[in-house]
Amino acid sequence: MEEQPVLELKPIGIIHSSYKGRGKAPCQGCGHEEICQVEVFPEFEEGLRDIEGFSHIILIYWLQKSRGYHLLVKTPWDVVPHGLFTTRSPNRPCPLGLSVGELVAREKNILKVKGLDALDGTPLLDIKPYVPQIDEKANIKVGWFEGKVESRKI
Figure: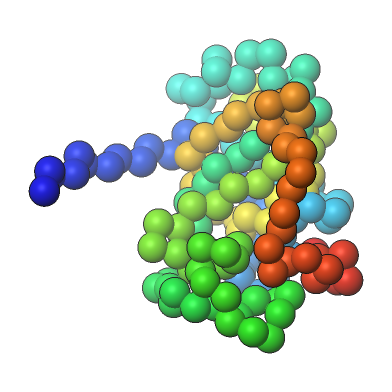
């Protein structure tokens, strides 16, 4: 078996929000009006050039409060346990978070973003533009989520 390469993650910034603990953050950020400040470290600010032209951005971050995981998970949407990788649980073997947020404004290295569920102090790992022609998909199946997401505010 080949030896795996060393994985190094280097935060490029930090997410500031009013969500101080896991029980305070919404279950998914979409549909919520809270505006978070995404601070990109000064050495990466030049990489934000032209970001104002995008209405939405994809943020990838480290779920620093994640503690352990189970391969079967009960979710807020169902009482039946589901496989971890068919859920959006923050407790994962590699606790990465991903959100598509609305870019409200940019002030130098600070992005004001709506629709996140990240806790205050969350390390930011990457930003990508949301491009509907690339990111939207057709003929989508949502597995066990079918009929559950619409019935409750996320």
